[in-house]
Length: 168
Image (cartoon, rainbow, N blue to C red; front, side, top):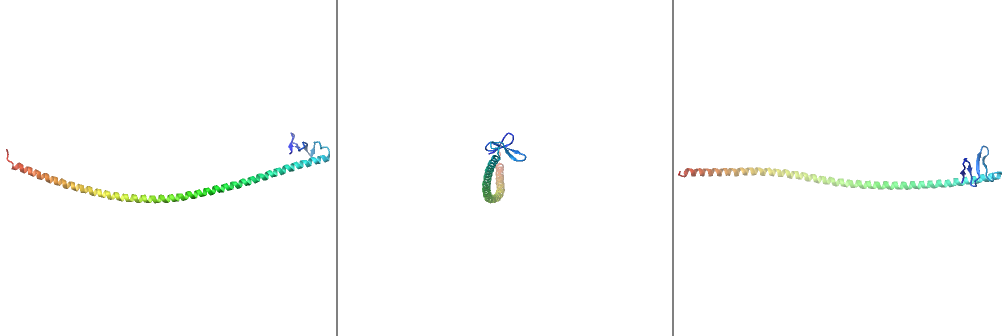
């Protein structure tokens, strides 16, 4: 693989330096650098090395693209699974809420009927209580009147005795 030396010049695999010159492209300062044939061989080696590096990088890019595609597919499948799971869960919860709502509505109706029945029963008991209180009051008056009548009779007898008894 190529490296760059301290001055920024490109170095080949064999350690020779290639320096960019204005008119001739690369010039070699390595062991084969004195002849044109040596320079061409150095350039060919450099081209092969660069070509190998490019091919290696292309393979890495393809591998990364493949990995990216695989990860996207996995992510899409997981997203679809989560959506399906959430959709099923939402449907289940909605059905449960509907069922519970229906049960609660029935329970509310039943309790409302019980409240109405209890109110009716309470009203009837209050009316019976009032009737019984009136009856008790009437009986108390009758008992009270009988007591008064008996007391008058007693009083009359007592006064009759007093009148009929001789003075001593």
